[in-house]
Image 1 (cartoon, rainbow, N blue to C red):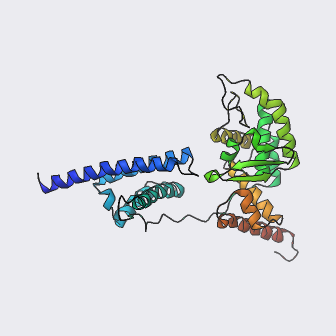
Image 2 (cartoon, rainbow, N blue to C red):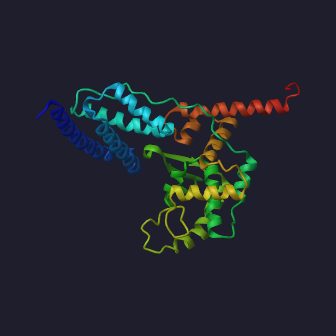
Length: 317
């Protein structure tokens, strides 16, 4: 056997072993608190794609160099992947190599010094009070779907919840007497968020009138009867279905088609800060792990104050 054939065989053996390590790492992630099934599935797909790349490039994955990893990252940028997607791939690979070192399967963290692309610091898109009113008023309250959608949109406005958190909301998570809901955010972290009276009234009406009728539409036995928001087919509304509903009402209200449900979350945070809420309270209400994430809304609030000053101050020309 030639030296080249011998190296090729070693690469194949190491790649097979590396793929086995990936399977073990994914199994490990499945048992870690804070990793949802969706996140684990995304990490697994990222790592399988990484395995394909090292195989295609003829690289020994347990001895990959910093230069080679930088080339791997550069391919994402040249293929016009968004920064968040590149960051996720990077996080998947860095996590794998950290785990390999921790488990004593290798003595070198090949990806330790690897840094992803910088994100552009863009200010979040917020909605005016008039835009929010137009949006919620686009719902036909005479129909079960319309009442459900109005309740959904009011909860977004009232709580600043992520669309995935609203999808995961169960009826027991809602407390009308205390006027609050329990949300489970990233990493399954639980938080309690107060709900204003108008939203509570809509929730009560939806739960008593529309939801039972929507549940009755189930075409197969429904094991998820605790779900708060029910589709026209009688099952829990997914985040994608709720997002589609939001976009439909944006069109009906003739608002900016670029608006997303997250704009309601941005608006909620900005209004709280503009109204005098302290940063730590807003952080807790939004479920942010890092205060720096919350601080971006202070820039939005300042910009709005500057705009108000320009419009109202007699010497601001």
